[in-house]
Image (cartoon, rainbow, N blue to C red):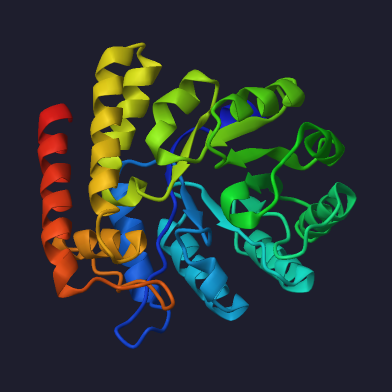
Length: 304
């Protein structure tokens, strides 16, 4: 199976799952895995921004990934984001992901220092070399990483035979077209920003990896289905409603991930809250949480 056939569809960015004391919860991770498989998503993406990787130890990230892969048990692919500040820890996580059967590994660029493109390519290639039998994806999220993927950097990375594509979380949709052009049909691009899934698909994205997918997978799966069937107007209506739900959730003072975890808890899937310094839900946020939850239910009933 070639790259363009292998990667497609709706891929929820998996949430960090914690016990009440804040420790990683393999049991809750398994429950969320079962929940999302039941919803019909095409793959799971573990350890990224939505997985709060920046606030976890390497050992915690291993534990959560193992729980997800074990529970998925081959029912769908599991992708692992493995980048850390330390290149050696990144390589360790890459090797661990391959050893446990991750279908692909992803990595943001090194953060904090503004490095030349040659150093960024060295960092990515070193991570990829630690998992030589596993596809590698660039995770382009310049608004958080502080470094943006460029055409010249992508051309350099195209020399890596394991490069399968880009998870593009930059806001300009046109970036998707640029990365696809440079791939010459050998690589794919996943849309990142949830608010523009439909636009990203129209620009050629193979699917989407998104942070709000897990709280309303039915709506994103429907957008993808309608797009595949050429029903753009109906897909646009759902995309716009998804955006309104996201805007509502962002009205809370709590971190967005904490809000979405609270909505999941209200619907029978308790994965804990967000880890500090991400702000948790307070009593003042509860009316917004309730309204967003209701909006999701109405949208699913209306469109799905």
